[in-house]
Structure formats: C-alpha cells, structure tokens
Length: 313
Image 1: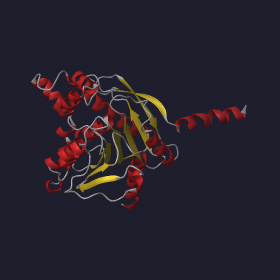
Image 2 (image 1 turned 60 degrees about the vertical axis):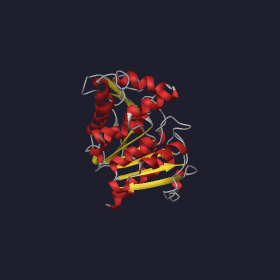
Image 3 (image 1 turned 90 degrees about the vertical axis):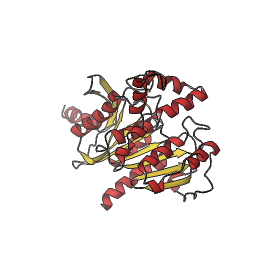
C-alpha cells in the first residue's frame, strides 16, 4: 500500500517533466489552441523559453522542431510548439491577428506556469515558421530576445506572384488567406501588407535576428532567397545592405556574386556550409550550400550561443 502511494506521488511529477499536449484558450476569440509544451522539472530559478513554430502546411504535431524540443529537455529549458490556427490556407491563419495572438498567448501561458526568464525568450521556425518568426519579431519586438528564421517568406505579394508563375499550391493558399489576388481591392492589399514581415521588421532592429537561406532555394525549393536577403536589408545598416543587382544575381544564378566575399567555414552547418554571411547591427544573414531546409546542428549551436552569451553577461 505504501509503495502504491509513493508511486502515485512520483508518476505525476514524471509526466509533468515530459513534453505533453495542452490547449490554450485564445485571448482574442476564445477558441482553444493546441500546443506541445515542456516545462522544467528541476530548476526553481528562471529559465529560457524557446518558442518553435511549425512550417507553412503543417500544425503543432509537426516533428521538424524535435531537435529543439530535445535540446530544451536536456537543458531543462521551457519549450512550446503552438498551433496558431494550423496550416496557412485560411483567413484565420497566415499571419492573421488571431494567429499572432495565439503565439503571444502561448508565451504568456508558459510564463504563468513555469519560471521563465522574460529576457530570454527565443523564437525559431522554418519556411512558414520562419515567416511567422519574422512577422512576430516586428509585431512584438519586446517579447523576444532573439529569433532564428530559416528559409522564410518575407513578402506575401512577391511570393504570391512567384508561386503563380510556378503554378504551385501556395498562390491558391495565399489567395484564400488574404481574401483574393493582390490588386483586387484595397482591403485585400491591406491584408497582404499586414501579414507580411517586411511591413513590420523595421520595428525589430533591437532584436537579435539570425536569418538563414539555402542558396538553391527557389530553384529546388519554394522560397527564393531574395526573401531572406530583403528581410536582412530592412534590419541592416544602410552601408551593409546588399544591392538589388546582387540580390538578383543570388536569385537567378544560385551562387555568390563575384563582388562578394565567401563566408568562413562553420562546423555547425556540416555539409551545408555557409557560402555568404554578413552581420549588421543585431541582424545576421547566412546563405548556405543547400535548399529549402533547416540545419538542426546549426540551430542547436545558435541556442548554445544564446546560453553562452547569457553566462558571459
């Protein structure tokens, strides 16, 4: 009997220390939003929180960010992987006011239920998650200390036009989300603008933002690397911005322009080595030898750097 009592006390504690699914009522419309969460079991001191966002066509069940989740469990950091209205193919998703609020609600939920250090909230995502990460950096720059965005979309009108030329599903899904094609009405054009990171990134210059793109994305992937470069240009000092000619060369040739210097080796990128890298202010742009993808080892190294920088401070 005594052993059963002890087991009953231990099991809930063990369960609480594992990643688990929860639901968070939206503060905007009351709809319950699912998420995967990990809350620290050992530390009583404030810990970092990592918010990982799913990609364009997925939801909170996606396993793409599993390496980030596992890093948080190993280091006993808080972690949340919210749904924010699921795949980006309806007006409630795709950077809407509701989707933005869902992510911010997820952050507040973890803060209320775990000892989170509000100065160490980190945000990351790939593709559609990278898109949403950049959007949130501009929409709520005081919430996030640092952002790691991989192969992101930064301008929905530009991506709609490119996707239309490719005749892929993304043009249809952007149309469904924004209420029509660009130029069909002022109300529709406003939705494209409000939902595009480039409309907001000028407000995020105090946030550490790391943008990564594969050199062949847009050729063997769905998002031309000009999206990443143009986002960096908004964040960068004027003298550090890439020219439109250089951006066009990157996009069309899938190689580094002759006028630019090749990046130094970075072991965390493995066989997807950086081809070009530039930092300016709080922003860093890395163009690596790859396509439409995230490099888990490099993202984990970025999180390790956040940890080391905090110790150094």
